[in-house]
Length: 343
View: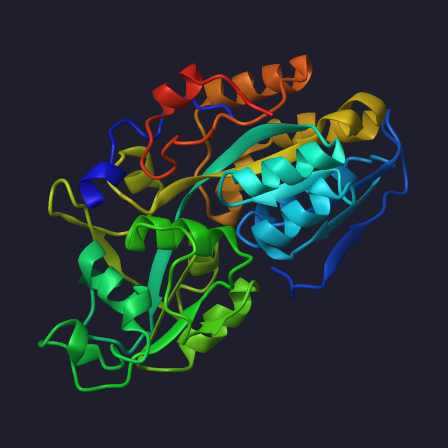
């Protein structure tokens, strides 16, 4: 299974970043740039730190548009987006077919824009001295659906691990991180044991793992970077080379952190881009601030990727490059660039 998930040359030019779930960030400017309007964003907690940073800088520049950024998870964000309740949806995975169908039924066309890369990070308690690296197979032993109520002790994962209760923390089922991780580790997105503490708020997961010696969890790299004094990251054994690799920008850029490196997206309502000049201005600004992706702890895309994204925005290229049967784990970026978008 793992061999089919891992392909080469992930990190190249590519076209298509938390608060409590109900919280929103509202930013209002006191002076004006050229555009005005309302911009509503919701979705992924993973992408939230990038969008939050972009919105703050955009508003500090004097834009008169009011930007609100909510966090309801990638799935929750797409539900609002396809219902026409938001102009932009943050997503830590590509849009799924049922979401494409919902948008189509509601008459919502979208532009898919990659904005950064992430190294999805597995974390343990800082006093965990027995796990410095794990294989995909060991993670599957822990998180597979059949592990529920069965794999409850660390020494069941590996006999060298201590006799200690295994306590699990992970994103909720509305999270794109949950979808991506379960597809990469269990071979089927959304298929996971259910006996774990779940939250779309990554800060809740950080708090849980930091307070329990027997815990393990996973979330985006930015949340680990922000809390690395409270957590240990686990190196993931590269299935091709057998080498343990710590999550980092360098490992993602070198295509070594597999299969848990992934692109992050924003999806933009095409009609809003056409009819609300403030939305176009904000998204153009977003694509010009790759430095903010780096600042919050993610990996910026190569410059040609942002150029291509800007061209897609300018041309109003709608749809997704992730059609039926297109692999979303480990797919080469060159292959994605050759795919025709579908609506």
